[in-house]
Image (cartoon, rainbow, N blue to C red; front, side, top):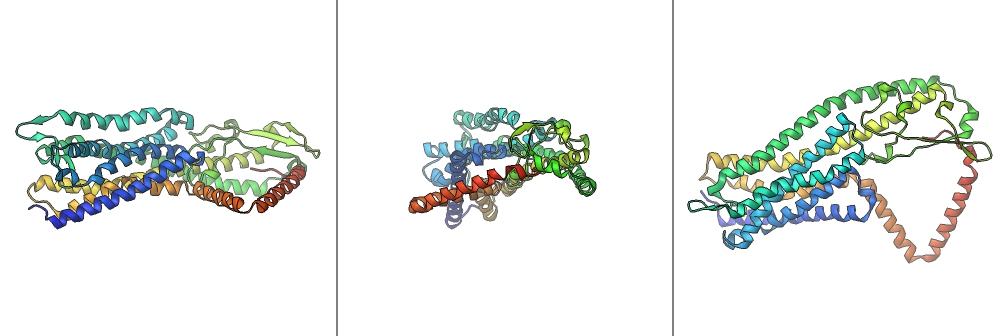
Length: 412
């Protein structure tokens, strides 16, 4: 039983609305990422690369059934089928790339620079691999089946006579990627659970150490610690990620995936700063300080993993309904179920939307900061005299802060 014109119209309208929503979300990702370095965290970089595939896939889904209406042999239909075959499965490969970063971070101690050097390989894999069958389909045609690209009910894609290619070259590889991603997160989850248990034990130990460790007032008055690091793995919890020297952290608290560095500066009452060795800290202070920052590092890595798993959940939301619809079509090839086809037309164009929602949640502090700077700039342009007074006030506060430098204590 075929679908009625009214049902096809409902599906087509839904596809286009969802495609527009996804295009808007992908545009937010691209514009924000290019406009400010605050958005360029490692996980966001992969989302940025994936968003280009989401945009191209949405161009294909936005065409909807216009490709079929123009004729299955038309250039529009062939172009639409090519876009869908190429870019829809690419999103699943980008989720796998995120999972690979989690695996390399936890089990092979990769830092942000090493992960960044892998990005060109991810680009080749995620866009190059699905391009091969999508391009080859242009040249495949038989007398009995015709061209590969043709009517697929929802839009132009792999035509019904070539239905076995949908499973072999499209849904099969996608679900292999999904199961591989799940296996990576399952193994990482075991380690995360173990680390979180260690964090709880370290937290109790830290509280006990702080309660029983005497602190020298003179030392507090003259010592200042400045932490230098690149925020490598965090998202919304990025401000908590700091780094300390690996040799200063007891082995049981040391995270296996983050490079550590620390700069120690101290000054007398006069305010002149001189380098001092970390050994100047009392033993209890070293352990307490190292434990706190080891916990921060583990929390940052957990944040990265948490957001990567959100992308995996979005991947399941996208592919489960469409896969069920495809299996139903295999079992009942002459029955076109409206509900299942509608669900497929609804979820498949929304890949970019889900990615943008998670991206915004990861980058929400950066969005708030950018919005605050934008409002401040506009306010300053509207009231130049207020801008001048603000600058004078800042200068006074900086002077006061500088004057009190010698009294600041041990800082994180």
